[in-house]
Image (tube, rainbow, N blue to C red; front, side, top):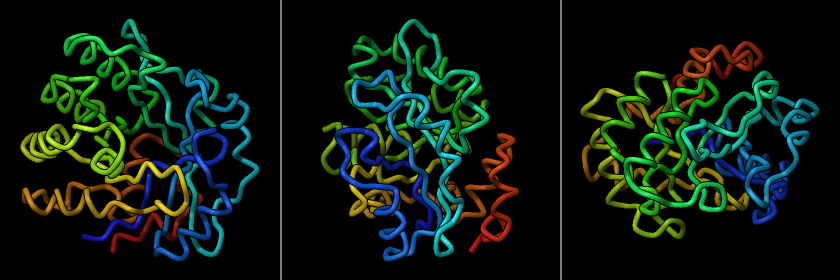
Length: 251
């Protein structure tokens, strides 16, 4: 399985990350990544930039050296089933939006509370990806969440960092999520959650775990730019029309 897109990466705008946008383009060229998303933390996180950061990403080019960048955000799942912290007026500026649980924003509680909050984010119409849902600090009714994601056309993220050094204890949950996604006929992205350009596209552990349980590559949207952009077209994202060659690339 080859992963040619990475949908989750942070720059120095998230102050616990260490690379610039320029660093990511250089790394993508070196690693054979055709499309990546910059998804810095939304401002509700203590290290997130101001909302102006996300609206002003329009000053960045769409492509450098044939490699495309999506303008994105890693938003926060909010308490009290209030969805995400993405303001309505920002949605037109975003090519892609992830929503994740983060402890500084929503204190860990119980499975039922987390599940309701996750489904509120999924059904908000603001996001395309549910970020690192295998986090053991936020147990979920995984079947209910995957069904909601499928019903609202939101992909489930399998996060390489969760296997390696973040959110210890995520592995059994991530494997369960892949098994449910396969059984319930849904889709995932494999993403690095890079906090340094050195990690861009590093999803080898996701691939190895998927192959071990027989998870089919046909369910992975990040295998080609065409598959990922087709998915974003289903969310009426105009970026697809701006990248016609990549949108046609389903290799």
